[in-house]
Length: 300
Image 1 (spheres, rainbow, N blue to C red):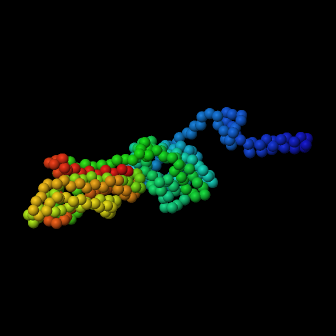
Image 2 (cartoon, helix red, strand yellow):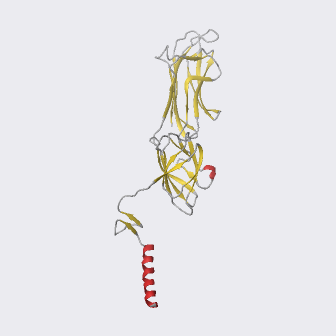
Image 3 (cartoon, rainbow, N blue to C red):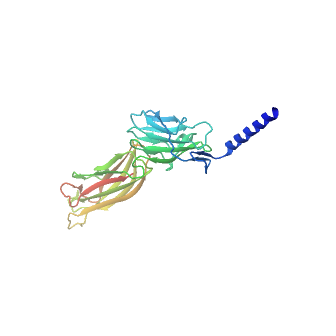
C-alpha cells in the first residue's frame, strides 16, 4: 500500500511540476508563448472617484479605471501599485469634462510618474486616456500611451486687432488686442507676431519725424512678467526737408518660448516710439486697412 501511495504522489508531483513550468494555452492545444490566448480578451472597467485639485491614487487589482468625481481641473501626483509587482499596466479614462494633468516625477518620490516629454502631461477633454506601466527597479510609472483627441496636434491660440490704436510714448505699454491667455499643454510653444502701421509725419519739434518702433514680447505666469523677446522696425522714410506717410512692418516668426504645462500663461506685445524727433506711432486697422494690421498667434 505504501509503495502505491508513493507512486501516486510521484506521478502527481510530476504533473504539477510540468504545469508550473510549461506554456499555457487558452482555446488552443499548442501554445507558442508562456500565455497564448486564441480568442478575445476583456478587461472589466471599474470606477475610480477622484477629487478636484491633486490626487494620489491606489491602483488596486484592476487594469482599466473610469475616472469620476472632479467638477474642476484635477491632477494625479502618484499611484500606489500592487505589492511586489513589476510591470503592472493600468489605463485611466477621464469621463469628466475637465482637464487631467499627470505630474512628472512629482517630488522625485516613489510611485510618481515619468512623462515621456519630461514635463507635466496635460490631457484635455472627456474620454482622454493614459496607459501607464510600473517599473519596480525605479519605483516609477512610465507613461506608455496617451490620447485626448488632440494630444498629437498643435493647438492654435490667436488674437487680431480690429480697432485703431496708437502710442506717443517713449515707454513701453501694452499694444491693444495683441495678447493671449491660455493654459499650455507642451513645455515649448511657438509665438508668431505680425504688425504694421505708420508714424505721424511731424514729431514733437514740429519737424519731419525720423523714428522707429520698438516692440517686446512679455510672458506672464502667476503674476510674474518677463521679457522673452524684442524686435524693432524703421517707421519713417524722411529727412529734415521732406517726408511722406510710409508703412512700417514688424514680424517675429515661430519664436520658441519655454512654458509650464497646465499653468495659465499670457503673452502680451508692448510697443513704444523712438528715434530722432519721432512722431506718433499708429496702427490704424480701421482707417488704413491697406497698410495696418496686428496679430499674435501661439502654436501649443
